Length: 251
Image 1 (cartoon, rainbow, N blue to C red):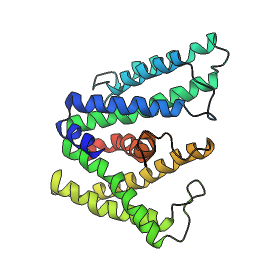
Image 2 (image 1 turned 45 degrees about the vertical axis):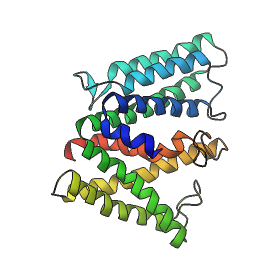
Image 3 (image 1 turned 60 degrees about the horizontal axis):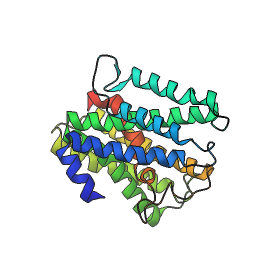
Image 4 (image 1 turned 180 degrees about the vertical axis):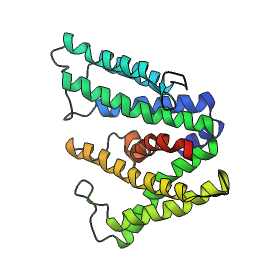
């Protein structure tokens, strides 16, 4: 995974965009494969959803865009493309269409944000993605070593000790990355942003754990042996990137 991810992140450009597009389509497929969240999604609807998702992901900074890249036109097209098939299919219902719209926007926003942040600055991108990586790693380590108080029934293996420890080390290590790679001045705003992104990243993990619990599955897929699916690996990153877009001008 690192052998693929590190070079495309470093070189950026079209290599990174294509990489993000591929994992986004796989993530969308994992969501459409859920059996209890919605009815079976027709192949033509998935194809339309994939096209809409890629249009959102590859939106560049333009005058009609939301924040840095996600376009009103792309969102409008996604809504129309997902709702109209409900008229012609008995099995594809409006609740399925709304699920698909939500999936497209969630993935489109975060993955478009990843491309745009990387385009603006490799250093800032590394700082941002380091936050969920450090948080998850130390939350697991500290939770296993010292965890006694369960964080949530959604994910019984997570503990409050792991949650606090993960965020603490994220503030220390990710801010150190910021200091050496982005700016030699680490203000209290950056510390607060790092802490916020760390906490929300853990919430993102719980959100996708809730989705798995609701569908009675352990992993979203088995595409990565021993690690599950794409969504199992980028669940916290999705929320972190989506939130980082809000703070990007201050980072």
